[in-house]
Image (cartoon, rainbow over the protein chains, first blue to last red):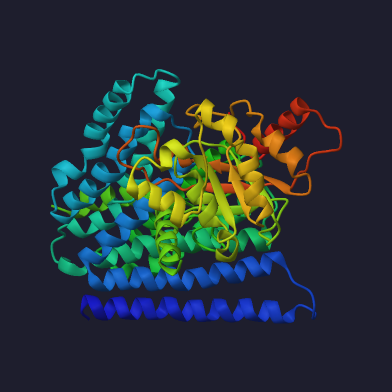
Length: 314
Length: 208
């Protein structure tokens, strides 16, 4: 099978799952007595509807290949960085550093991935942005909470740009005997991690009793976490044919990225709680902001990238 | 007027695209009632965002109150300020305010049935929080006791384009519209100013 055929088949399967999910959502809504409505079921249905759009967008970008992925993830990074900085306290003196983050480092990071310059895209933000941004901020001559502000801008760039850019960066990997099928690594990563989010939500709603941390997230439960990670590890293992991995390797890698994905959501929830908000934004109906949807991808993508790069690239 | 409406629509569309502005109506609804919206002031873009977040039918009857010296400075700003946004322009020089009282100018606009957007801090505030209110809002409320005063907290606009900046940062802005308030019978100046200022600052998100 060619890459495109595999891609079509996988997307077809995902759409079949969405059809089932939409039917269940519709059934749950119709089962309610006339005149009643349930916030949980309404939220479920808006979430499913948003999933249709997200899968169509991702599928379209994958279909277009490298440039589709670069454009889609530049946009996702841009939107996430907007949401992150909007909720973070910055001052007048940070303006220059923010302009550089949005209009220089973000496009440059993706341009470097597009031209496959691993040596620079892997250090652009951790080295160059890390050193240059505080210089501009110091030139703003405002020392109020200086370290805190410099750290926030750097953190936003790391989470929203550097980490997320490792998804399209998967396409730069050169794995012997795998060739242009690297595109399917993106499918493996996104399906595994996002299905983990979905299954955590489903298991949490069905069985959830013991909250992991009431102070950080009222909706994350031990039952949801274990059920979600186990189920989506099985999903990852089942997708092994898309990858250069053996089934047991696929399962182990899926377990690893699911755990990181969970803690991605957990850490970003801690920031949201500290800022006193529930969601990063309101862009995706039912899900909140863009960053709410990709927090788990942000934490798992660089780990996945480096696992594959270390063990599969000669 | 049709062309001015298109220019206004384009400016609003651009502002929305740039700032992702989201209006939260907390305690009031976008209705055709006559109102005075009073907001915190961080940048020249403030009134555009308030304007952009109102439904089009309300935009046409809502006029910003602004300083004449700024808006009459160039032909372009005069066109935008006067023709597009139909600003009520206040001459801030001491001589002029003796001739035509700003309160009479604003009341005049209200008596034509329009709503107003005012910034009671009187100037752009480049720091956090709110400056003390100028007494204008009190005199306006005394002269128009039947008009609803609605506090509007603008979050982040000042950070998109701080004073002196050339390139805007594309942050997401939120506008929170609060509950309507009116001047109470016999309420003195300081009491009303404090009450209005507290109503506005209550809409700001908690700061650490």
